[in-house]
Length: 348
Ligand SMILES: Cc1cc2nc3c(=O)[nH]c(=O)nc-3n(C[C@H](O)[C@H](O)[C@H](O)COP(=O)(O)OP(=O)(O)OC[C@H]3O[C@@H](n4cnc5c(N)ncnc54)[C@H](O)[C@@H]3O)c2cc1C
Image 1 (cartoon, protein in one colour):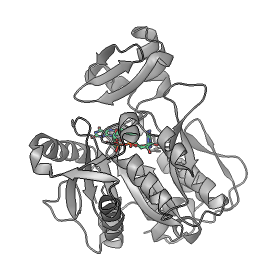
Image 2 (tube, rainbow, N blue to C red; image 1 turned 90 degrees about the vertical axis):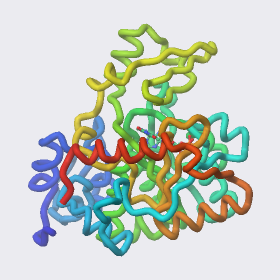
Image 3 (cartoon, rainbow, N blue to C red; image 1 turned 45 degrees about the horizontal axis):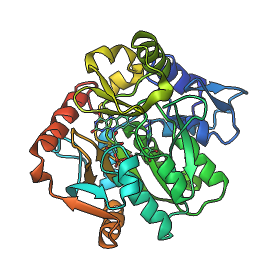
């Protein structure tokens, strides 16, 4: 690991931003103590002279990254060769018992139900999640949710990038003492690097993280504006829900549905997603994904923290569960998609 303190320009700008490896997670922007960086068009931008404090390169998930090193920190060991989707304790299928949550959520409503439960039990004061922009349908924006209603409003998946670390920053700024974080695998990686640094200001309120399984995310201008609106003539305001089950299934408010083959969407995948090797958010306390299931969330419990909050929610009736053996297709898809993504970039 690097010991000399490096500035933004000689580290992240040169080796991450200019090489198109920046995922746009905003972690460097969030941790910069002197606010030298701002988030512009999905990337960090230097807005005043960098003092070379050396913090941003230490927390970037795309700079000086070592899987064994971070796994050792999180799990006390590096993963074994046969742990295709990372170190874990248990696999389950989960569903929210609250019908309102289930109907608004992406898959089984597990993420929303767990956050809502944790908030109502006082385990957390808020959650860093993704909301939706008021003026752009399906455009995700980071959101600090501090009520069950706000958590419910954020339910569902937006398949574009949402830098949820900006919502974590808001929670810290508002002096919240206990927070949950929901994000994509790259964002969970960033959180772990912040913990390793450590920057306690951001990590001491963190009670648990939920990582969303992720093959890729799309550019809004490309997929939504150029393809759905331009080529397919869909009115974006008319879209009720979008889910990926072998193809992109688009449910319209009229009750009709249409679909887009995944092969037609590849051109809109964000550049940095092509370099990502983490499908299942391998470093999260809990990982959640749809994996072709209908109305259930595939859940991976990875850490004691994750298992503990999950067990509490289950015992108190916020969730119901089934065994993964009942859905062998989902279990094998998890392995398949994880292996496929690991081919994107070799692991050190
Ligand atoms: C970009 C993206 C790609 C995905 N790709 C896959 C995939 O290939 N295979 C798979 O099995 N699962 C994938 N998922 C996960 C899946 O869509 C569901 O999020 C997951 O199954 C949990 O479902 P749920 O019903 O429990 O979640 P819900 O209860 O609906 O909660 C979903 C949570 O995700 C948050 N969220 C929504 N959009 C974003 C976003 N863009 N960035 C960060 N947080 C967000 C919401 O704020 C909410 O808290 C993807 C998710 C995202 C965000």
